[in-house]
Amino acid sequence: MSNELLSPAEMSEADRLTIAAGPTDGIDLMRRAGEAVAAVVLKRYPAATHVHVLCGPGNNGGDGYIVARILAGSGVGTTIWASGTPRPESDAALAAAQCPVKPRPLSDFAAEAGSIVVDALYGAGLSKPLSGDAAKAVDTATALRLPVVAVDLPSGVSGASGQILGKAFRAEVTVTFARKKPGHLLLPGRERCGEIVLADIGIGDGIIAQLAVSTFENVPDLWLREFPVPAVDAHKYKRGHVGVFSGGPGATGAARLSALAAARSGAGAVTVLPPANAMQVNAAHLTSIMLRKADDSVDVDAFIGERRPSAFVLGPGFGVGEKTRKFALALLTSGEQRDTSTRIDGLVFDADAITSFREAPDVLFQASRQPDAPALVMTPHDGEFARLFPGIADDVATSKLARARLAAARANAIIVYKGADTVIAAPNGLAAINRNGAAWLATAGSGDVLSGIIAGLLAQGMPAFEAACAAVWIHAEAGSRFGPGLIAEDLPRALVPVLRELVEARTGAL
Ligand SMILES: NC(=O)C1=CN([C@@H]2O[C@H](COP(=O)(O)OP(=O)(O)OC[C@H]3O[C@@H](n4cnc5c(N)ncnc54)[C@H](OP(=O)(O)O)[C@@H]3O)[C@@H](O)[C@H]2O)[C@@H](O)CC1
Ligand SMILES: Nc1ncnc2c1ncn2[C@@H]1O[C@H](COP(=O)(O)OP(=O)(O)O)[C@@H](O)[C@H]1O
Ligand SMILES: [K+]
Image 1: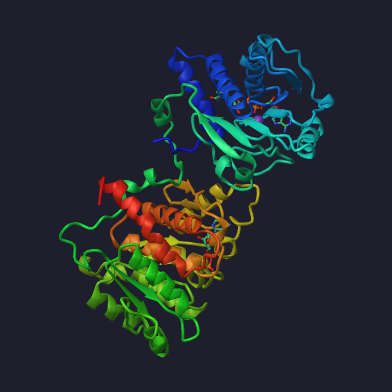
Image 2: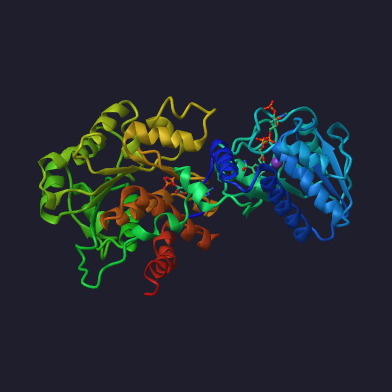
């Protein structure tokens, strides 16, 4: 798998293990890194009149000295602008000594239109906000609209969190090494990276495996082996039955969006569960989706006993308050009284099911910790996250990745922390960052569809973390492919070509 994301600490451990295993040493890694960047510059900017290489004092700068040597050797006009000097006897000092281009001070940095900037100031070792000459260099490159090729990360972008420390370059291309880092995918860093080129510098898969990485890019490789494909002898209840709770007569659309998405995602049967006074309005809009009254937990229990649903969605359009809390807690704690034939596999709590616990989140978390509780997936956007996880949400110094992980551990649930850079985190520390979405998905009801997809996959027996990751990717893929004009009603139908491709990839053919 090459979808692991390495923290700066893991990257330097990979570096250490590679060197310890031999015969590769530090300068070999640096040389390959520099060669990869130089190759990108030569290929992408063949008409560049001049390349300005900005070199910092650490190994990122060391990569820059190698780039400058190769470019100058290829006949490209090259200037080095250096901030500080590499530590004596370091790999970067060796790279600088072998570079025939004489460095000029970064404080004098000036460039002409038509030239290119290679940003090798700071990478994994960024330790404080960009200031002084480095910040001025960002302003100069921005004002002149110079194309920037970033080495490892645009300087100023934290590889761990994607946060911008002070200022950061906006690269057209970022060349990174061995594996991507969380900062390449988390906003706002992602936006500053431009296209990301991953270069092999000789850190083998075996070395990465030794790191036991727990953060991944959310791509199908992560969960495809668990993606459900119906068996030859499938019948509708074998494909899983999803119950979706509906709000009252004026708030039923969200549940129907969820229900349709669960059905499209492969659940064999889906039932919308409204209060009695919303049966009529739901009935007027449903065809293949079933309908059953659920006024209270007696109704819910009877439904579970008779129809054996395997997953539920609670929250979209349901309303905030005591009834929601009661339903949520009853679903979470019902396992104690059930035999295996009526056991619920998974729950998706979204929207109002999250907000209803804003005054007493611990009540919810205690219930989700009971040994018999079904797997719980919660899908907060920023606002809902802040309501359920005060303390974690306020800690702006941490990354969205770290916040999602802390929340998953606190809630004993899979947390799908939504947004343009959705993070999916599990209580055991596994996490994935999604990046195939598009802003077309920012439309009312889009989150309801996501909840339905998750429940559809849970009902078919997909493990909860994988189901959440798969649903986020599928939802994002369908929305970005649809593009302009997307409304939530379009999404369930837009899932079809995406699902077809996944089934083909999973089975080799349909
Ligand atoms: N690991 C690997 O496998 C490989 C890694 N490689 C390369 O190494 C890079 C990491 O190198 P690195 O660890 O030396 O850190 P780097 O980013 O050069 O910065 C450290 C220096 O910058 C300084 N400094 C930081 N921020 C600053 C600021 N805002 N303003 C001012 N100063 C600041 C910091 O100062 P200090 O924190 O000590 O005060 C220190 O002197 C990595 O990104 C990749 O390009 C490749 O060669 C291939 C193999
Ligand atoms: N700019 C964006 N880029 C990618 N995905 C987005 C963007 N904005 C929102 N989304 C996705 O759209 C969905 C919106 O969900 P939510 O905020 O709950 O909306 P609603 O409550 O209206 O259904 C989430 O899956 C979110 O990740
Ligand atoms: K850089």
